[in-house]
Image 1 (cartoon, rainbow, N blue to C red):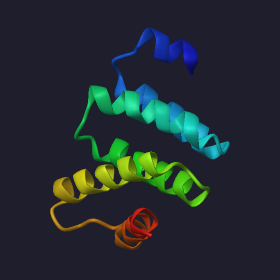
Image 2: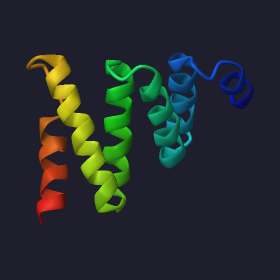
Image 3: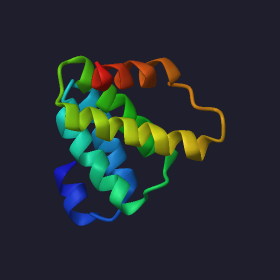
Amino acid sequence: YETAVGQHACSSNIYINYAKFLIKIDEFENARRKLLKALKADDSNLNILELLFNTGYTLAKNGDSEFNIKETIKIADKLKALENGTFKYSSEYDELRNMVNG
């Protein structure tokens, strides 16, 4: 994957596939970094946004920083706007908001 990323740094699909692999082996922080790079190339890609939200949610459940939780909430807000009423992570979103608001 590292070679492919180096050769095709602008391809969001390479980052998505690499992130999926990293998620399978429980490397969520590395997956998040790859997904953030993919998001720079394609900032309205629902697949990237969903993977990024799920990765951020998993990290939040494992004690991630408040800053990263807030960033995950922003990703969810973007997903909500793009999905036009079909947002499927409402309970997770509420849970993240409660983590920040105490």
